[in-house]
Image (tube, rainbow, N blue to C red; front, side, top):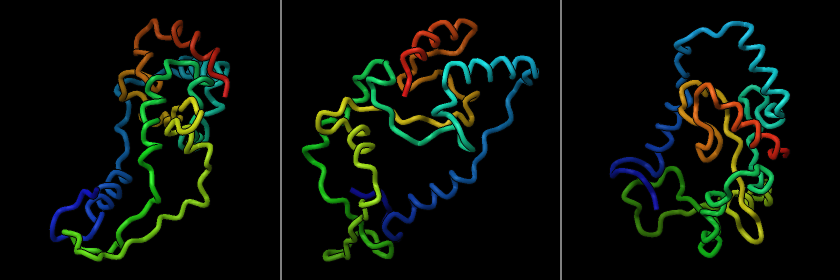
Length: 172
C-alpha cells in the first residue's frame, strides 16, 4: 500500500511532509517555571529513574521496553501480535517510480541486517514476546495532555502519587 498522488514519484509527498515536520519546533511554554521548581522536578526525575531512558539531546533512548518491565497495562503492547502472520520481506518501489505505479516497476529490498531483532519482537509482540512500548521523547511535553504510553497519568497537582507507584515498577 502506498500513499501518493498521480503525477508524483513514489513516496515523494511522504518524504516532503517528513522533511517539513523536521523543521518544526515547539513554541515556548506559556508559563515560566522558577529555578526552585525546575530543580525540584529534576530531582524527582532523577530519583524516579526517568533519566535512565529519557536522556540525551532528545530525552529518549529510542528503545522499546518490554511491557512487563514497564509494569503498566499490557494490552496495547500486544496489539500488533497478529502481524506476525502477515509479515513478509520488506520492499519498496524505487524512488524514481511514478504514481500510479506502472506494471513491472522496480522493487528494492529494504536492508534489515543492522536491525535489533529483539527490539522488533518487542515492538510487535512476535513469538513469545510480551510486547513493549517505545520510550518517547520528552521534548514538547508541556504541550501534551497525559503521560505514559497509555495516557494513564493525567496532568494536575495530584499526578505525582499515581506516577510514583508506577515508576517503582519501571526498572528497565
